[in-house]
Figure 1 (cartoon, rainbow, N blue to C red):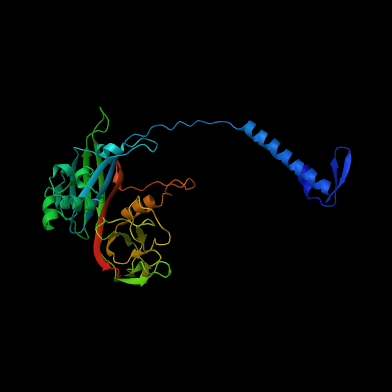
Figure 2 (spheres, helix red, strand yellow):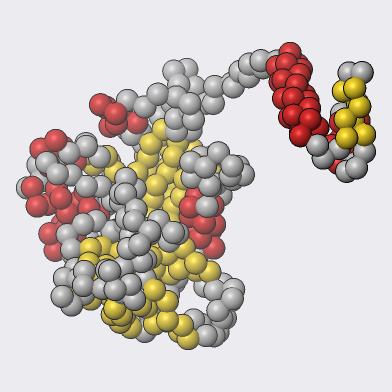
Length: 361
């Protein structure tokens, strides 16, 4: 191969061809070089194919764990969903998603001011709610349902008077700013003959700082300016480190969705600054994204911004979850940082403020 490279790149040299002598740069040389390259590629392909070896990797099955999807927000009761983890290459039964919920757990929550509450389990189909109430509850849990009669039977652990909360806005135990909350969970064993599973988690509801204002700006692309506008958030970042934000948006009657570009931010580069930043619309996980309109809202939309201060552990969970590389085969593996002891998932505290703006037509 070294001889081949020297021969090809030595201009003015005399190249061997059988018993003939060929002058470099001639037509004969060109044909000779082309044939030589083809022969070298053919031989290389044979060598590489002959040296290949099939390797079969057996991935050991992963044991199931309890996954916590829990939250508590200022002036909102705690909502805890418990599910079972599934193997990465396992099969998911889309016809019976309700089978993945963990039932029969004993869940309690205690605040740093000494108040506490048991959180019994409620399943949607057992509540005898009206269609509008069902849609409201599903939306609060982050689910959508075109036909509430066929809605997924979501099961959650929450306060005993949860229906009163959705009817009146008040109940026996709701989140308060500047308090920490400890979650204590004991679930039945996931495998026959095993012990029950004890999980704990602690979170904090920070002070809800909020934003300064929202403003509408036109789409700078003339092709979309008649249909879309941008919403900008004006923010004054506190002059101390350790502030973390998560936000979602609600468009018209949709649920609150996180933006696909990431929903959490920290303040390390913006301490004490006043900023104006474009608001990225939240999207359903199965929505088709259009790069041309990703940062814009339809004219006529009513947009509600849910702006939440969160603690560092909650930030770490969502930051690692949203930056795991998605479905790209070239991404590096990322370990999701959980704040749940003896399980997976997150128990998140939110100090939240809400803002609504109508995009003019």
